[in-house]
Image (cartoon, rainbow, N blue to C red; front, side):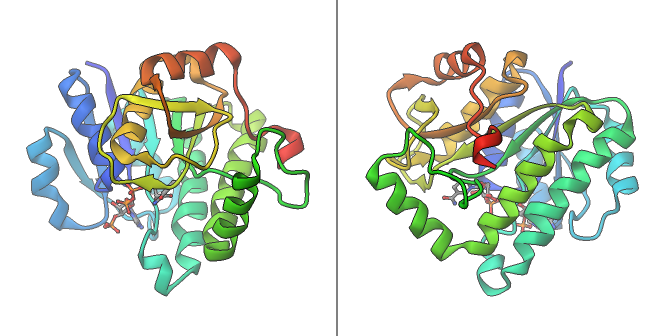
Length: 253
Ligand SMILES: NC(=O)c1ccc[n+]([C@@H]2O[C@H](COP(=O)([O-])OP(=O)(O)OC[C@H]3O[C@@H](n4cnc5c(N)ncnc54)[C@H](OP(=O)(O)O)[C@@H]3O)[C@@H](O)[C@H]2O)c1
């Protein structure tokens, strides 16, 4: 049976990914930091594993990966609302936790496939604005970096570490960078690739993009944005893979 291990397994996107993968016959291991999520994950058919990204060492994370030997690892964790009160938590979880997972995959020595949740517009803002940005995107960028500067820095540095450190690590990674989440629920359609800030995208559709990437190994090496849109998710992801979309090339980081 194919299997996937999700760090941040109790998150809203992560649970939606887990539910879909379980329905498709995958074994899902959900790594979580709070026991209260155990019953709901068991109900979904996932196997909860207790481990906090704040305290676990690379060796401990590697041991979790080695023990469960998943076909793919998903990093879907984030400090989230806790970082509003304590912004440095974004650095601890979204950046350093992610980088420890990248290193742990190497130390574990088995699983190569990694899917990372990032966010739209993680880029070096000293460089030129991406060519596909509209005026609204430029404003969206100002707003996002203005409201969440530490979070954006954390996500940027994690993405950069993964991309630039990969000659050494040799992972088969895909970075998925959604725009703001909206509450519309599952539509089955998105815009993926060099997407814009608007329309917002639902967490369920983002989760389905992850599932489509798990099932499409040709997305390895792709870094792409996701917004609300009109293309059936599997088709949108297939096009990203065919065109080898990389919205985080050297000129953006
Ligand atoms: N909100 C947006 O508009 C937006 C847009 C684009 C991208 N994103 C990204 O998408 C990600 C997923 O979104 P979401 O809605 O699913 O977020 P979420 O529900 O807040 O999920 C994040 C998960 O990370 C877990 N986590 C936090 N600290 C951890 C730690 N130390 N060890 C292990 N797990 C830990 C949380 O567990 P606890 O509940 O126990 O803390 C939570 O289950 C976000 O983190 C964000 O980076 C968000």
